[in-house]
Image (cartoon, rainbow, N blue to C red; front, side, top):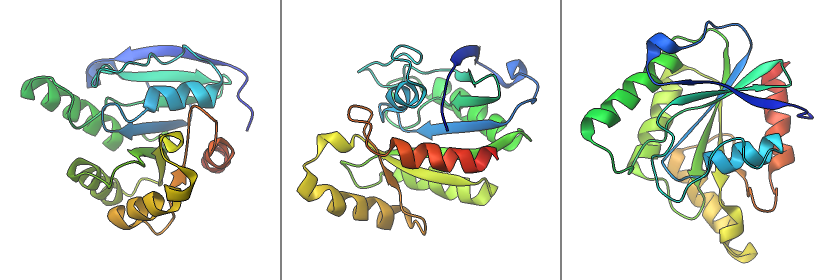
Length: 192
């Protein structure tokens, strides 16, 4: 898959604002600060398309990026340790749940986890929830460049075992582009 164009089309803060389902959609979900924005920028080849931040919880909306004028890449708010109120976290959860359970055009879900750490409780809950919804999904283990080559397989095994994956996670680095081909190949299959 070659991405020629990608633009932010909508930022949605509640489920009543969701655009009408029209084009195929692929959503991305992960803990706050797992690298979703960096992955989106690497995937689309647009450095500033998705805003990156060292502060967890910056993505507070569902962002719809129109790719090649043919499909949407959908960035869901991060879950986990973002320092926001319980009320705001509950609002994000309702927004994410409303999106995931009500989109007939959703083709697949990319679940991002940090390869440097064993899956956290919130990752396990998300993975169980994805399975219960029956949405086609794949796991991408981000921040691959942050660990030595000699320890990568050990970390990847911990992610795969921790999440109980039958299809192994794709190790990925937004810095080096490692894993980008495997990711685009997987997304292409969902969009066929």
